[in-house]
Image (cartoon, rainbow, N blue to C red; front, side):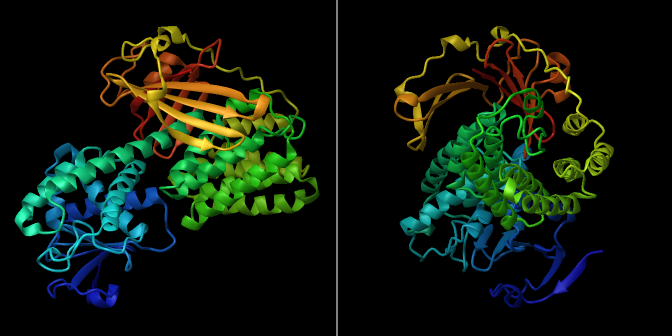
Length: 559
């Protein structure tokens, strides 16, 4: 049953609204609506707003708060960053509904834009903003204020992407409808940006958004390829502009994975659930026993997991991964092992408490129980370890990692063989044989890392229906430099052709598994899944990327 809260907006938020906007319904801790709004509109706005806030993962307070009203007295939406408030009116919803199949993308576009104003604490009203019927036409616009608009555009686009929406191309069309609906003629706007000027700003924002998405996606693909140090640099580059619990967590995971590679096989026999690629980890060999470097990476990881928890104290993945990093730190620092493992146990139990009963976190629940088993095994309590492993298998009967650790505890070999490789010579994207692709200096997109021991350059080139990226990485210095180039060719949006085995965009994951068999690696992303297939003879292969609904959104040839 809905609770009707009758209160003056001024007393709630410290702001003054038209007197006819008094009664509101609280439908969530952070959403208030007027009682006579259609329920289907309220439901849609609530769901999109919640998805966006969850994607940001910033729950340090309930703010920003959304107030959905019939008539705000002027414009479609306005953010009040100091108060942590967004006001959104029904007419703006109707404009979004006019975008048909892109209606949710349009709604995400405007709400994400306002959310960024609040998260970034922009201290002025944006182009939707108003404090009078005149839309603030008498207020001069400063360069830094326009920069806030560009930032809200492109970071709002990235936030929408994180939440599963596609907003490319939406903003210019949306602005045209807003200016038309609200009769914002050039004569009325005076010193405020004209429609063409505002659309040009949106185009500039979209280019910045594309660059940011390229960095984020390259980080994902390099992580899938186990190039953790390189992937880490791309995520750190993203963090310069966009911060969220997921990205902080991912950076911490990559730091942890890099540290794991530095343990000798005799030091660490167990496989921790923080890892992205379970099978290669269990069947492979590791590290050079660089104790100082691995501990440095683990401490960095713990710092990033803490930042993720600061954004959302109830985010179970950050607690689970913190427990893994602490357990590994105990392995590396024998003198402090007992203390680190006690803290790791606390972190694992917190992850279990937060994940229990939630389908969204079912895998995290099983992984946290597995971690408790590993911790008991490290403490030489095989009975306790077996009990936790059995519990983890009750939660997930097909949990490969639990079975592998169980075999390790029992002194049994992990005999599962990796899947057969694929014949990459038969896979072609865009009628462009991979060997014919040529990149040169004019295709350089930017320097991702420029340290003394690690330099990374991003190179990109667009073709008719695909794009090619190259990650040029140099590690070491002087005569010890190691150069490694990784090339990826990925299908573009709407790609109409098929793979060698008849897979096309939109196909379900089950069909890919039927045609290509079991992959060498599965990588879970916040917005979907990747399956990686490796060529039998060298470091090349295919990556299939699926969206949150399990549909193929693109595939990639890598080499």
